[in-house]
Image (tube, rainbow, N blue to C red; front, side, top):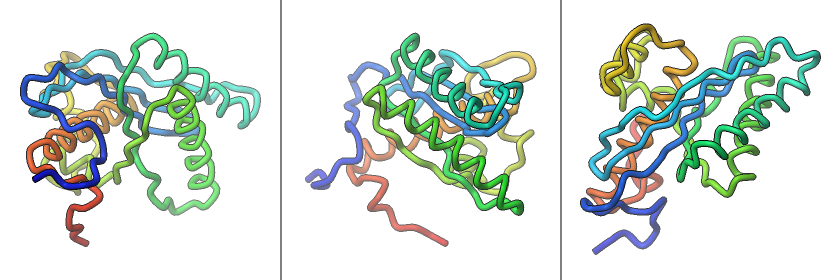
Length: 189
C-alpha cells in the first residue's frame, strides 16, 4: 500500500526519464547542472555551467544575474524537477548571509517557473554521489565525471550542481521503490 503523502511523482519502471535541474548556490558563482534520470536513478548528462556573477556592479545585481541566468536555463532546457543544496553555516556570518541570499534568488527563479524545489544537505549529496558524507570536492568532481561519463576536468561549482541533481535522481528512485516519501525517512544524526 503506498504511503499517503507523496513527495513527488513516483516513477514507474516503464516511465520516461525525468529532467532534473541541480543548483549549487553561490554569491560569486552558482553551479547549474541538468540530468535526465530514469526510474532506477541512473542519470545522463544534459547540461552544466557556472553562472559567474562576481563582476556585477553591486550585490543586488549579482542576485539579479543568478535569477535571470537560471530563468533562461530553465526556459531553454525545460527541467521537470529541481533540487538545490541547503545552506551550511559558514564561519563568517557575512558570507553565510550572502550565500543565503544567492540561494533565495535561485529558489525564486525555480518557483517562478512552476517547479517544486527539493532541498538536500551537503552530506546527503556527498553520500548519494560518493558513498560517504565526508567526501571532499575532488572526490565529488571525480565521481560526478565517472557517473555521467564526462571527460576532462569539471569546474567545481558545476560538478556540485550535477551532484545535487544526481542525489535527487537517486532519492526519487528510492522513493519509487519503497513508496515512502523522503520526509518520512528516519534521520540519523
